[in-house]
Image (cartoon, rainbow, N blue to C red; front, side, top):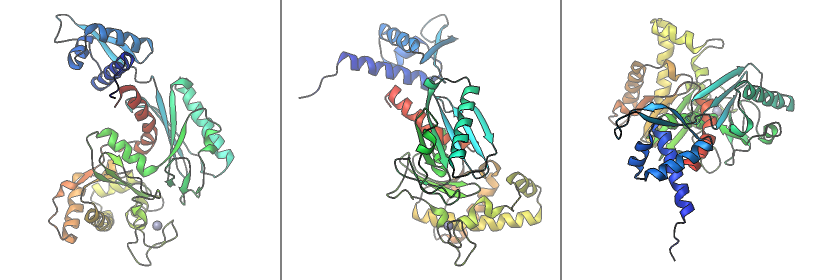
Length: 378
Ligand SMILES: [Zn+2]
């Protein structure tokens, strides 16, 4: 027997449709909502009152409407009705960001704290998160959750670090943090959180190979708008593909991995910053140009190999992204063209659209996404 929809389900569905419409269009009038969602004015009015009373939306100014002669009241969602935190744990520092329902940064702090696999460290980080929350004037009810971006592979349930050689934190459980925090918490692989940021800023993105070129190399495969996780949690760990027999020692313990050729650590000297490197490069310093050329040759070899496996767009992201210019892509493409058997168009190489704070924001976004899916029935 076909189940019929109850009046309360219709009511709930209308509310979700209205919230979603306001979220997407940012500032709308009652008339806009009624017209575009084909709902009666009384239905819209009732639902708007409920949403407003619940604190999800607010009236904010007046806007022109094509349906009335005078300006109508404008409705918007309350962007910080719920928020989430993203925490990027690095060897020498911790970056904490808070984002609203639009995934926009509402605050960010960075602490120079050396990573330690100890309870004192975990307690200290949680205290910093709570202090940051208080400084933002946020109450507990608003916090959806906290995502910890880790330089390591994470279990599918996001509760455990399966492999964390960079921080020597294999086996670390999220419980080490949740015992000091009254919110849902989870781990996320840092390359995955960067790719999530990319998907957020390009909602139409369906398929891509996302390369996170930061101090360390990472990647994520985006397929049909989602990140592929793999059977054992080590999908697209391209950084450990062997490239040079007996090459440089990688942190994984093997030699000549892609990490040792294509990460920022491979490009930069011990104390060198990307700022100083790219400044010298753009000033046409010959030694820097030479180093860049060698680096791009390695990167071209790596991308060509991956591109032969997965013929899709390649997004160059990570800390390198803000410094890249289209002329760099042209050089890279020419190098790929020389070694690939196919006449490759340059259109598959792109620079990340969201280079700033992408890892910490991406760690916070899954909580926002779940909330929006529940609220707007997406
Ligand atoms: Zn390796």
